[in-house]
Length: 80
Image (cartoon, rainbow, N blue to C red):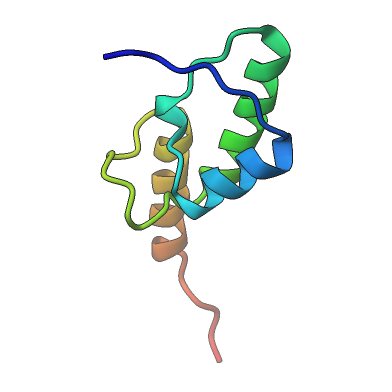
């Protein structure tokens, strides 16, 4: 498989990631500044994976989200 190197501004990358058109797992950063930017955008967009993303979310962020969701389900509502 051949590889393509591209460059785009941060807003475009954020829009593509948040819409699900681009999966962070498909990105390979070529320098430290790009990696920091992609990491920041991935954190921002990792709260809810796009519904049409074929990849199963994995890693610490997804584990933390699952734990948070589970804790939210077990919280008892105060008496009315």
